Image (cartoon, rainbow, N blue to C red; front, side, top):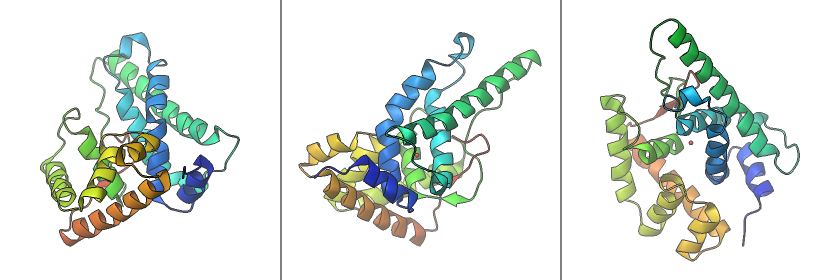
Length: 214
C-alpha cells in the first residue's frame, strides 16, 4: 500500500523523523535542480547546491512542527523557500568576500546541539564528496558504518536504499518487494536500532543552522 504524502507530512509534523526524511529525500533532486538554475554564473564553481539543500534540510528538521500545510505542493515550496534563503546568504557571502579580496568561509555543519541518527546517515551518504571536517567526524562515520553492518539484512537494506543511496521511497520499496508502508516501518525500526547502538558507544552527531551543511 502506498503511503500518501499527506500522511507522511502529518507524521513528520508530529515528530516522525523517518517520515520527514522520506519527504526530503523524495524532493531532494527537484530542490537541487531548482537551486542550480538560480546560482549566478560566476559562482557556479564555488556554490554547491547539494550543500545548500542539506542546510535547508537541517533547518526543516528543527522547524517541522511549525509547518502549516498550504496546498498540494505546500511542503516542497516551504523547503524551497528555506533553501533559497540559504542560497541568497551564500551569494552575498561570496560576493562580499570577493569585494574584500578574501575567501568566503566554507559552508559546513554548525553546532546547534541537535543530535540525530538521520543527520549522521546523511553524513555517510556525503562521504567521498564532502571534505573531512575533523577526527570526530570520521569517528562518527566509522561508528555508524559499524552499527549498520550489525543490522539484520532487511533493516540494513532499507536504510541504505532510502538514506544513503537517496532513492525515492517507491523505488526502494519496489527493489525490496515490499509496500511503501512496510518500508516505512523497516526504516523506523532500523533508526531505533542504530540510535540505541550509537548511544551505547556515546557517539552523536551535531547539526546546526549557522551556515550548516538530511
